[in-house]
Length: 82
Image (tube, rainbow, N blue to C red; front, side):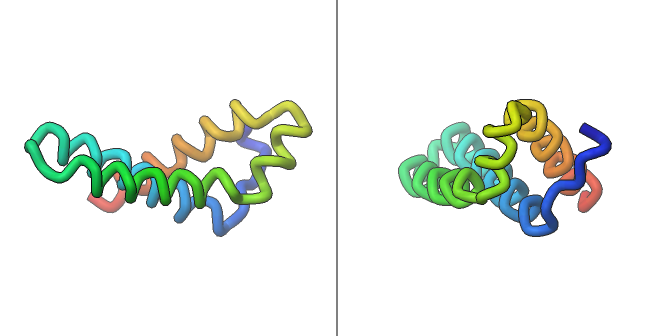
């Protein structure tokens, strides 16, 4: 998937979903408000999933591989911030 350029507006959406997922896990481990964290995650995930790029990739039979590439890029971006 290295030859596929992801849309510029996709990475921030995937980063937001990944951060929300991590916040949900942290809330659960800390005994915090998991319901609020879950709601934030579901909103971020739905926004990410609604991006029209995914339908294009689904139709081309590449959605899973492209999703993984996008997830990997989001993880790298978060790691690079630290």
